[in-house]
Every structure is written in structure tokens, then in C-alpha cells.
Length: 381
Ligand code: TRP
Image (cartoon, rainbow, N blue to C red; front, top):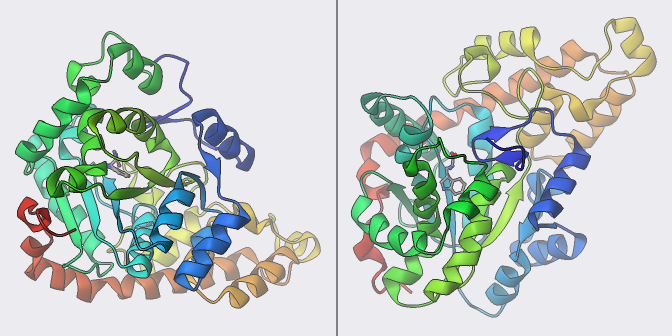
């Protein structure tokens, strides 16, 4: 990797601070989500999702255009994805919760790309394992209860024919020097890596290509994916389609602190099948705390909830914002101790995980209904 790119889809410097996020967003050329965007969203959906309220989704590209045209009655669709590299933990699932909210509020189609080819190219995972991981990840995502009529999963290796024909068109417009500058590749990276971004670009215009109509696309993603879509936004208009828009999140805090929850260490995140006992233990033992060393100091000086894992996850899962504000004030003011905060968070997490079971079982039964089918889109719009 060259030292040009501080954040690429495959490498992120850990411990990004608030100021780093706005700096990186503006370096990349994305805009911060401002009050105007928030009030437009509120007007169109009736509410502000907690992830917007707390600035977890904090930046965008042309989101205003999506909202403006939606208001005039023009449809759009959503596109997001997952690279199947291992089991999913809570940090992986939370962005899908937000996407589901957008899907329901705007009542739109959603494409979910599962980039098994990406993980084959970028990680040393045997092909046979990727297949199992892929199926499990899909079921984990679907455990949030997505609408099968409007949710369409594209597994790259299974939709290779459709993706490849479009990806070739994209790839013709991306030079090796652009890929090097944007992704930090060097001469020793495989040519498969150089091509891959063309595959990730395809779902951002696929429904337009299939239906023959120009349908706008909104892509929710974490900031590390921005290089892909920066390039895609340059290329897609050259193919005759609208530039995709995006809504961009920070990283979900990791259990032990730092930028991103890692998939390699079982204790680094809360897994979706962790029992309430395990959840509690992980929080008590490993969760990065914004509290003070001793109860006495905590009572006296209070905690810093903003950097506290338990508090951060609690506020993402507790939809009653008044309750969250109350806890914030008490924790910060020293009325609540670290252990109590962890217990409250563990209970909230376990209650949430509990809700995932039924939809996961349902998805196991109608798995194939969720799989992308090009014929569905020929005259859908
Ligand atoms: N490359 C992403 C990852 O490694 C997966 C992905 C594909 C994606 N398409 C996307 C993520 C669109 C967000 C939006 O996780």
C-alpha cells in the first residue's frame, strides 16, 4: 500500500476521532449531513432515525438530490452490501438496521451485494469456506426481517453473468493509475484486485440498465467504502446513467475500543448467537469503558459516555431518546457506575438479539425468494 490513502476499503487506521471523520469526508469530497438534510428527512419520513440523530451516519454525496426528486414523486432504490469474510457481529449488522429503516420509510427496492469474489481476492479464505460464510451472513442480515418482495440479494459468484457484462463496461473507464491512487494498490497487487471495484459499481446502476429507465440509487455505506463509489460516480454517467448518491457512516465502535470491530478475535465483538450470559461476560470483561477506575472516582468525576462501548451500543438499540438522554446525563454525572452501564447495555443487547431468531428461521425457509432475479426488473419501473 502507498501512503496516499489513509482509509481504503481494506485498510483503516484504527482509533479515528470525531475530527478525523470530518477531515476524511471532506478530503474524499463528501458533504456533512446538515440540519437542512435532517429536516427534509424528517419531513418525508416522519422521524429522525437514532443513527442520524447521533451522527453515526454523518456524511453524504448528493443525498439532497435523492430527497428532492423523491418529493416530486420520482422513485429511487437502495443498494448496500457485505463482504463475507467471517461470522457477523453486532457491529456488522447495525448498518443494515439503518438501511432497513430507509427501505421501509421510503418504500423502495433494496439490492444487497454479497462480495464473495472480493473476499477470495483480498483475503486468504478457501473457496469452500466462503460458501458457508456467505449463507450464514445472508441469514444473519435477513434476521432483521427484510421484506422479501423488495429485498434482492446479489451473490457475486451466482450472478456472475449479469454482473460481468456491466462490470466490463465500467472497467474500460478506470485506469491502473486511478486504482493505485484511490485504493493504494501497488505493482505487486493482483490484477483481480484492480478489476474488483468494477463489480462493486454495478448494482449502483443495475436497475437502470435492466429496466431501460434511469432510476436513482442511494447507497448507505461506512466511510471505508467511499473510494469505490467516488470512482463509480465518475464512471457511471459515462455509461448513460445517473450518478449514484450515498449516505455515509462512521465505524461502529469495537468492543475493546478503536475504529472497527475485528472478525478474527471471538472476544472482539458480540456475535448474533451469543447467549445473554456470554453477552454480559464480554461486556463486563472486555468492553472499552469511558468510566473511571474506581467507583469513588466515578461518583466524583463521572464517565465519558461518548467513548464508552456499552453506552454507545445502548443508545443505538434503545429507541426511546428521552431514556437515552437520561442515562447519558446520569452516567456522565457519576450517578451510574460503569458496571451498571454495562449491565443495562447487556440486557438491551440480549433483548435485541432475542428478536432476531424468528425472522432468521423464516428466511431459512424462503431463502430463494430473496435472491436477485433479473427478470423481476424488466418492467418494474
Ligand atoms: N466491499 C464491501 C465489504 O467488504 C461489501 C459491499 C459491496 C458494500 N457493495 C457494497 C458495502 C455497497 C456497502 C455498500 O464489506
